[in-house]
Length: 248
Image (tube, rainbow, N blue to C red; front, side):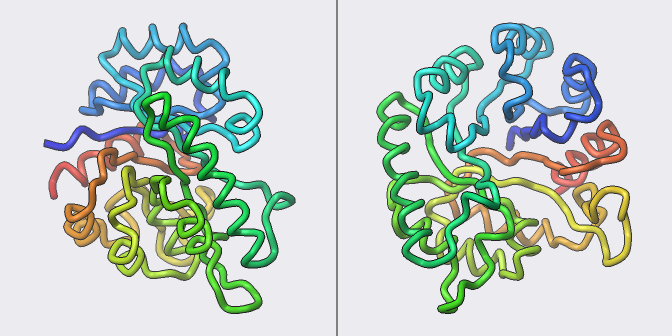
């Protein structure tokens, strides 16, 4: 039986945090994934999670925080009881423009891995779509990142892979051994859900999640994290999405 997680970022527009936690508990979630907004008072967040029987098994931390304030990251992760730490994004102005730049970024992640793995955490990179856009020489940033950082894990955001124009099954085949977590989210049919940035509740869009779950069973993935970047109703998203994946 898989324990499913929920990226709390999905509910950032529906405060307070205490509102979504009983909804997650009621719908059968056992885990959540954290992001910056819930770290301000980590002790209070931990108490709220404990009160609803939820564990924060993983969390997102910016590259700046990971590199410049490792003790702060470790304090937050320790307080919240995390097992995995992921770098989630790279701002547009920070993104390299060529293969060597992306390899350099991969080496930065490899260095961060040394810090956090030594402290007992899984450490990895979470992708968006820009890593799958070919560079001028035809090469792919995501490959440069993973190849230059052989020790890091990968939190594969499948829907972003698709939006980046890549085949998630191919990437699972090529780099599946690196996957420790997966973001489970869906893409609405073209022209639909424009008020939700074109995303959909899991099972209500175009992503073949049943086949993907079959493919992912061959990987060491530990965390299946439901996420919607801009739901109009986070309770609906949480409820319908976990019902979809539990039926597989």
